[in-house]
Length: 311
Image (cartoon, rainbow, N blue to C red):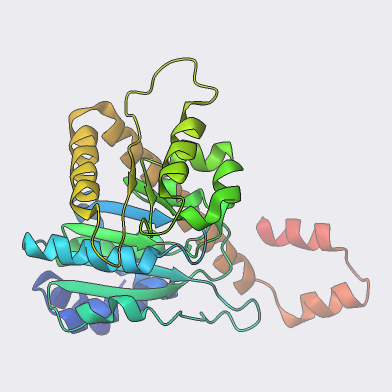
């Protein structure tokens, strides 16, 4: 199959560090068609070169502000940072609402930072079904850290654990009832727990509640004990400690079998999403207008038609 010159140019541009090419490649990757397949084949060898940090938690807890602060700290280390901020999609148009993300706009002119707001396209779990393809683009671009900020759907937001190496669950002292009601899914996926807006009343209680919740139902101690920290993205309180915890978790993954286990799970999830998209796309291409007419006229039933197409 002859390569699309537009894709070839984008691939070459990403590899030489051209930021405009990164933008084009991410757009092609999000489209999920043949061009995305070419990108995937070209960039897959960069799998695992960056630490992928997922930030999840309910809306309004300050994930974007926290992301902005982390980007600044990583840039002080001269690390290249990519960020994928997932926004909810319209169920009608498929378009993303694309939140203002004003708190991270200060990094737009920094060539060592690439930020892209992407649509979830209705995928449950707070992610996009092309998230892995876009991660590979940023890895090929040379990013050392990739921040993935999810839609923000709270306790059901567990899909991030299948894409990120390190999951940071963010909450605030204002969400006391939410902290008390934290479910097993959220408690199990979090590698770090952060109480943001630590300048508000109730910080110590929120930290204590999370620590208590983490200890419930454990028959044996964890190999990795998730740290719980209080930070303020507004004034910088506790951010250096959070950064040290992120470094410590990255080291833990590199030095134990857990890192490879997570990478294998990511590959398994990416393969599943790719095959699902490919089958869906191929299936729809075989459905004709006559097939739909036959369904409406009851000349065939849906099960038999689907089985015939699947053959």
